[in-house]
Image 1 (tube, one colour):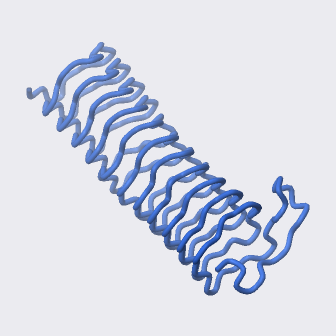
Image 2 (cartoon, one colour):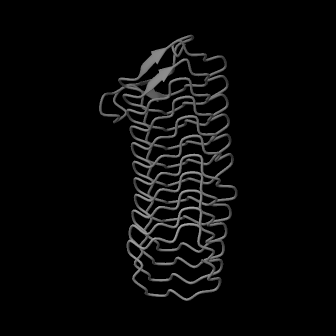
Image 3 (cartoon, helix red, strand yellow):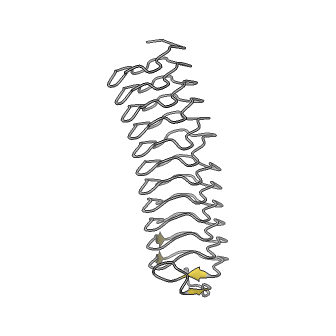
Length: 251
């Protein structure tokens, strides 16, 4: 089906089957499209502002340069979707499957990605600051030099993720799993690492000054050149027990 520049403003498309449809530059503003099947569809340049696409099938669809302000995209299947040049700032993507999606030049600042899957996604240099990613799956994700300041990352699966040079200052990483993660040169200042798991991680040149570290799990890590001044060892993270890391403590 080819319907470029179509006007679906306020339309009810819930449950519709439109796989492989060509809908470039169409208007879906305020549309109700829960559970719609748009797998492999061309939605590039579309306006999805304030539309509800929760539970939609967007696998392998092309949403490059789409407008998404105020959209509800919770529980969507966007596996291998093309999401280049899209702005997800503040958008609800909770429980969404974005695994292996293409997210070049995509903005995720303040997005709700709680429970979402971003496994295998390239987010190098992406701005994900102030986003909520609690219990998200980021296994094997490329986050080199990404901005994750103030981000909620509680219980996130970072197995094998690349966080080299990433800025995580002030992030909440409680109970996160970072087995095999690369953290060399990462900024972990003032992070909350309580209960987090670090196994075979590379912390070379990283900075965890001011971090809360009570209850962390450390095994077989590399900590050459790690900076750790004024870390908080108190159970409640209230600064009652502050000291510097001892030599080799983080290995």
